[in-house]
Image: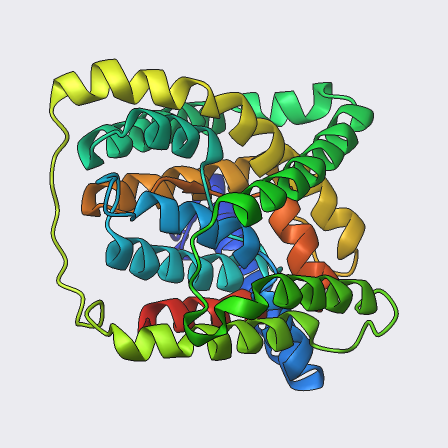
Length: 334
């Protein structure tokens, strides 16, 4: 009897091949969605990409202030830019890359060093990674009621609104030769925000950003000392930094990351962009883990995603991952 010469594949190999093909087709469809959406509404995508800068810039500037040594500005721009591009390609939605706010609050109040800030980010990444691998993030997603998630989204919005007022009261003047019209500029920006509710297709965030650049341009021209080429470097946090300040600063960030950065983002994405597959909490957990396990070693600030940033970018016109891919390229250039 002749032996069977046909190739034999185990069920595991077949399942692997099917999974790879499925992921490839999903990735291809995501890029088609990104390109199609950007070509249909380029101004809205570009405008929406800047919708979350109101959260990013104040914390980033505070982090890199001369009185704090918590992070490196260039490394943060480079790595958050790369993460913007990565998440835009993978998920195809305007998913923001934000600072971990609880860690930032502790770091700025205690004037933590870069080793201590990195240790906090690595600690949170390790915990989120463990929850993702064990499936506990998926379990949390099924057990947490929808009203809790909606309440988190409302709370984040109110906290950002309050934070904006605090920043306006305490901020230094960066307006260069326009110092006398600071209050008028803020009032006009607020009117522009209100107008965006009526003129939804107007690229309001882009207009406000360009206006801000124009106002700050005299100061930049007078003091261009910050311009230069990024020189990467890496460091390893010492055990003392990780054990004491790292865990202390990172512990309060864990529930905020689970609820607002992962579960709430997954739910809000399904509400705002029903035509695009919403990222699963497990996938979000792996991305948050990877971003911090990579960037923190190079002086980048600990980062995550956020439902408030997703809502803001969608509100200002972003409907695909092309918007944050564009933002990521801008960060890399800067």
